[in-house]
Image (tube, rainbow, N blue to C red; front, side):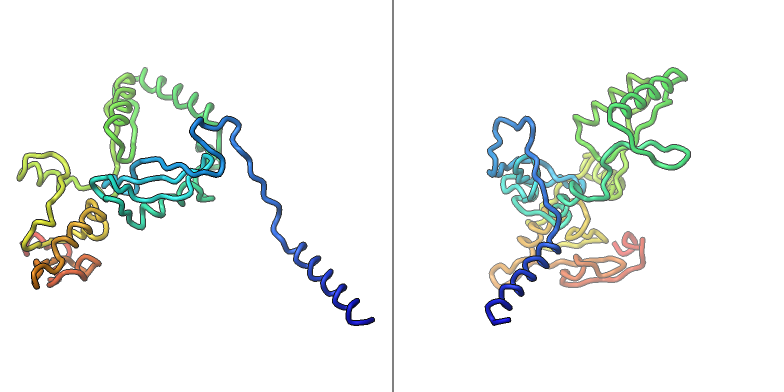
Length: 265
């Protein structure tokens, strides 16, 4: 065997090995009826609202051929002004997560079983009407934080079933803060603080750089307040049980026992 023949055989073996280890063929399926404004291969941006926390930052969703491929902050939104936190950036993973719920589920004797959307709607309608005939407030609804339009719609549906409005569950709820705002400012809700205009800022366990209210908004305002101006900067003090990211950025951090922030104040 000469050198040329050896190289040919070796090359054929490498090609066969690479072909055998290659991944299975992937197929792309186009939409049967595409929207009028969709151009194949050209991305379209849609304005929306982030729902990862109650802040409601404005986002721009990059949509290509019916699929969202990227999320960015909306520079025209008054809350985040084009910025977006890591939770907002990762929200896209919830759409394509392989462990997400793809169909409705019904609990049976052998566990949760999937069913079609049409069958789920039929069962939900039948069970709701059956429960409503037994008396008032026999239908209950538990929901996350939703907009006013959706809340009014859910409340109207439950009202037709002679039941009370839905119960809203929010892990990062601020009911105590709403009560304080109502007593101090006369507003039964969450307000936006002009942190950027403060000369001295004192925080009692309010980690506004992490999960408190609107971290993207207050990170921008805190930067404006705490930046160096005319060779001096405004001061920030943090009182909390542990030194969080917000406490680490404070000029002075004071440790306290959990739940004793009010006593320090």
